[in-house]
Image (tube, one colour):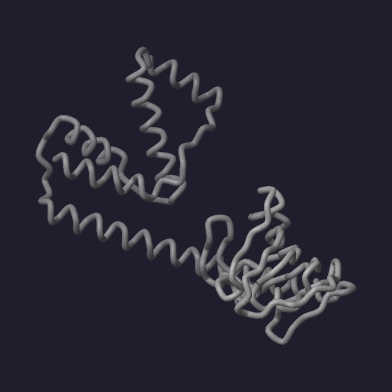
Length: 238
């Protein structure tokens, strides 16, 4: 029975985004009505809420009554009605279904964001100073430098700010207070192409279509199909 509890709890941990810290006055009133007299009572209530929020946030449908039965059985040391092999099969199927569900959602998000990005770039290309390469990369010179240009195998040192077309900043070396170094052959295609246009000392704005960015992949702060906007300052390269 202990194995069942561990497997289920690990499954919850894998899909949980984070604890929800939002407590309304109504929640506090309900807590008082529950008479949470000890810290153990309070922790139990909070953990239950956190698990429920994790299910809700990840769109996981469960039968709460059956979930409670499983928790109660595990807590009381009652043998599970499933064998270890059956449990592993159930959890494997669960994970596969969750992955498939996430992939379908990513595909929908990808298609929507790609179309929004296409419209944005179509409008952006009409702005003064914006140019577009054959690959579809758009750029605008904010400040022209006078140094040499890197090549695809160069390691560059840059300051940058990255944001989505809605203006949301997802990464910034300026905020971290220090530039970053990386190989141009180790980044997204839009960066590899764009940085080779720049002289040392230049500052460009790049608008990178998703096909030159992360494509169908969803990153932690970048939804699938996103068009990316970068302000990049080339400080040096080697």
